[in-house]
Length: 418
Image (cartoon, rainbow, N blue to C red; front, side, top):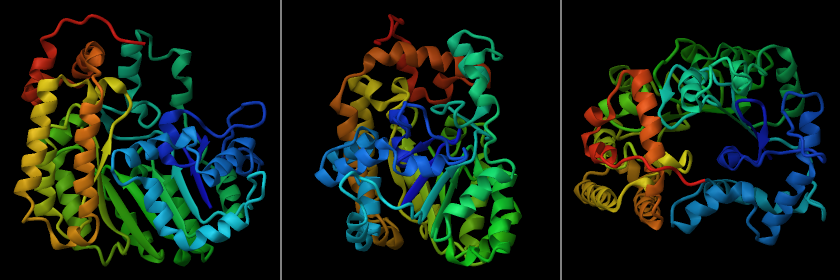
């Protein structure tokens, strides 16, 4: 019932499977793209999708879904669990409509689109796939000119520009109930707003719930004009720290503007039709695992009516993984996380207790377990190499911005595992 297309229009089972690079392919192994004529029809019951359905029914673990199973094994709440709970009443119907070969009718109810790679930020852990502003840094890391053909696919991800894709979308989604946008940064994509206006004109907006992942660096006036026409809207804000930490990781964000926009969302929730709620996602990585507590403290005070934040574990790139930290910093991060959770135990907002505090607590436990699970300090030379390149391109100094990580730069580089 769900369609996901990444920044280049490639289709995966859902957004969590992108890191596996196991996209939907045809019988010859060629990737299927959502904007190709007939692409969606071919993709829905490709051998790839049929096998995933059969594996799921048999209780096996499909490779594209390994990220959710990792969360399950860590005792964290996975996207798989959330969606199974949300659509539990429909599972018998979907099982009954799936034949013995794994084929199912094309009946889209949920759509998740990454609208290209135009973004106003250059997050440390991101790539040109999601922000083409990072091309310069990636070219420097690869010791190649920016004009090299290796980067051609990232220069113009505009499959959603023009009418062809939107006509395909309209034809295949008469019963769509949920439409999610991410990017890039979806709130700076004009075509996203134009398509919302198109759905309003067609009379379909009232039956569709909208949701977004956004860096909240902007809050365009058009949201006030368009969002009220839809069933409801949900906004998930990507924050990786409070104040200077977020500005460092999610360069060149302005914390003052983000804080202002967050408070505007809360104050104007009614006008903006935010019945789906305000949520947060934090990518826990080498740069912020020792400072997550500061973000939790901020959100407790600034966003008590929002949902408890979701903490995601960064798995790629591996040189920014929390598993790359030496044991002494892992122990310090563990201490800080435990102390924060104990200190906030009596301060959690009532709304958090109703909407996911248990998940936050289990996520912290899972993060600590994951951090200590493997020793990936062999990736520290690559961490230092990338950090030096990014510092140079951004005019930043990691040791000055995050002094708790200064010791990571004292070890001489000796190479990186394959």
